[in-house]
Image 1 (cartoon, rainbow, N blue to C red):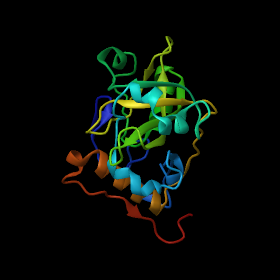
Image 2 (cartoon, rainbow, N blue to C red):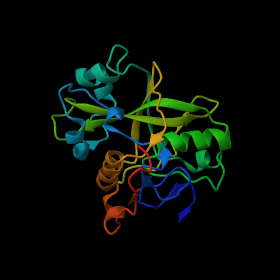
Image 3 (cartoon, helix red, strand yellow):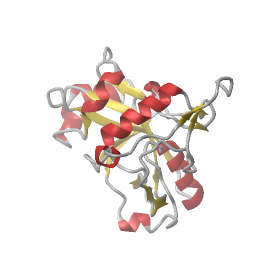
Length: 220
């Protein structure tokens, strides 16, 4: 079950909190295409374990050539604004319905739900992480991510945070960061399970994912 503004479940669920089924459940699922590395030759799947909030913030934003090459105005994924979003404050939470439930790894659906229920526009862009297994300022990974904006221009991100870093560096895409709905694949589920264990290790310590594999022919 889920309570308050954030869901406690560590199982991958759909945007309504229901159990997912490979080959059947439609939604916004993170895939390798949603990750962009500052090291062009890097394999995204090799980078996921050692990510964290950028070190030496905010100096790194103006001093790191690697970060500029990723989200700078002429970067691989140009951004028009960047800001740090912490865990939603009580004041921010008071502006969304008290029974709003947001799920881990579901920023796209979460942001759309906040827009629908609270009237706060969706901001499409990237969450930017540093590779902590590299020297400071040397390598970064951006993950496609959506959040919301208040009328005064301030941002709020209701998606539950990784346990190790409650603040996220968010970069609004200059050229949009669209994401399409799709039917859950086995590789989507494997990626989600890996991210869940990397980002929520304490919550996952005694939990196993309950997704079932759909029978053959249930859908592509």
